[in-house]
Image (cartoon, one colour):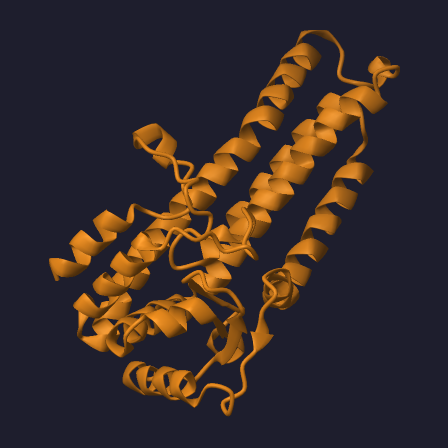
Length: 283
């Protein structure tokens, strides 16, 4: 994935720079910026997400019930216990973040802890631990960086058309230049859309995988199925969530904003809850 990421960024940077009339130095600068951004996101992305979400670390003495429940599920999964964070919100939701199992965090809203029964909450914990165990937390961070860099490159090219409009002679001339410019313009418009669709498709597939892996940990898929049913009935949006972090949660925190239909469903961060429940109950 990283190799493809480097190839894609280099290709887009080269095409955009040639079409806009900039030299290779600008491409190298943009590439270096994307690498630094990727490194920063890899090491500090979880802290940024937790800060944006208004989450705080939950000490064991504050909620021993939740800590012991997570610890028990970790023992069953053969995993290290992650740090536990909490969001003060009555909406029911949870997410996992971090770069690997040694630096993982599971965050719960106070609503999901208060409203779910023990077996249901165990199902949610197992689902989030599966994201950690399957390295989804790292995978989705890399995909998010990919989308961000592609969007930045496209935005840079489109803005350069305005900045560089008086210097058309620096661009490729002739028929090749015209074709190159058209290709670059099409890529600048469509590549962020395709990158976002890939991100959302990966997010939906990883949710199915985490459901299956979570059921394997607890040996009780009905617990997670019942939890998802309650989460589906909860119509309260999570105020701390936004479109940048929505894909992290066990269900979409942006209530009422999911699109319906095959084409519209391509833009949803999560698969339909009804489909997830049906698969869990068929195990």
